[in-house]
Every structure is written in structure tokens, then in C-alpha cells.
Length: 286
Image 1: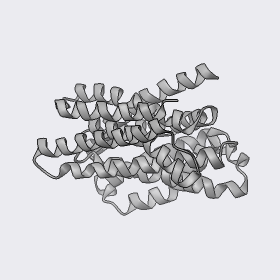
Image 2 (image 1 turned 90 degrees about the vertical axis):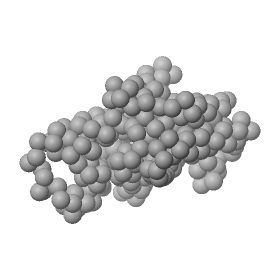
Image 3 (image 1 turned 60 degrees about the horizontal axis):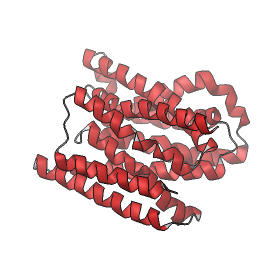
């Protein structure tokens, strides 16, 4: 089991680290709400095909937790990351995503009764300092307020942290495929409704839109559906903090994709990223 959790952790890093560049490519032809909705719709169709029968294992009283975790674990972040990447590079978004373990600790203490250790407090403070360096240097480099869009990523990390704690506390006895399929069944109708109120129907025949949809389909099926199943498995066989520490590795994968797409970080942004990861390390150190 110890070996399995590390294998899953690396696999998740490769999948989710690639998600940021897929979002960036998907935004070429789609607006953030279309991208977020299509991501959910593609994933929901895939999961209902492979996991519909697994829904019977979810007890009636657990559906309220399925609905809440769908909201925090995917629905809100799917739109927030798409909005953020209209102004902030995929590499920076992936680094800010590394704050998820810190928020997992904070929410775990505030809302779920977990206790802080001294090194975790230091880690949280250091992580927040790194975030400030990263964001404010980005604003200085661009000379604009674009980096204010970083706040959407920060909100998404809080949502992820809430999701991890909820699953561990209320759904640890439910199969990962059941949780994920249930999540997307709940999200399917709202996502279709949001897509309906955009101008998607008027541009779906454009080649640029169709190319974007291919990226979003990969993002939805692999980067969201498959990844969520194995992530929930990881939570169940490890701990919320270990599972969320996948964000150590995600920025490395995302940064390499960013280099291929001509994204560069300034020395101060590298420093900010390093400070964040040091904070996350300290917060998770036993």
C-alpha cells in the first residue's frame, strides 16, 4: 500500500501538471465558462458510461456529501482556473495551486478539529510569503492588474482543501469511482445550463472552436475524470495532507509544458515558487 500511494501520486502529478497547458489551449476558441462547462460535460459522459452501476453503492444519506464535494472539488474550480488563465500564465497558476496542502491544514484545523504542529504554522507563514512574492512580482513585471486574477486560483485551492477534508471525513468508505461518478452526475445539468446561456452554439462549427474542444475533451476525460478517481483512491489509502501534496510535483510538469509554449518565469517568480514549496514541505513534515 505504501508503494501504491507513491505511484498514484506521481501519476496524478503528470496528469494534473498537464492540465494547465490544456486549459490554456482550450481558451483559444472558447471562453472560460464554455471551457469549464465542456470540461464537466465531457467528463460526466465518460464517467456515466464506465461508472453508472457504481452509483448504487452510495447510500441515500451520503448524496448530500456527494453534492457538496462536487461543488468544491470540481464545479467551482473548473471555472475559476479557466478565468484565471485568461490573464495569468499556466506556469504561475500551477505554482499557486501548490497552496492546496496549506489550505488543507488551515481548514482541517478550523473546520474539522485537526491540531497544528509548530512546523506547520511556520510552513503556512512561509507559503503565504512565497505567494506574495510570486503575485506582486508578476504585477510589477506586467505593469498591469492582470495578476489580480491570481485570486481565482487562490479561491480554487481553498475549494480543493475543503473537498479533501470532506471526502476523508464523510466519504472514506465509498468507492472512488462511485464518488467521482456521483459528483459529475450532480454537476451535469448545471454545466449544460451554463453552456446554454453562452454563445457556444453560434461558434461551435468554427475550426478554432473544434480544436479547442479536443483539448478540453482530453482535459475532461483524463485530467478530470480519471484523475479524480485515482485521487480519491489516494485520499482513502493515505491522508488528506499526503494526497494534496501532489501539488509539489504539479508545478514541475506544468513548468516544462510552459517552456515548450514559450512561457518564462522571472528570477523573482522562481524565488516565490521555491518559497511556496519550502512552506508546503515544512507544513507536511512530520
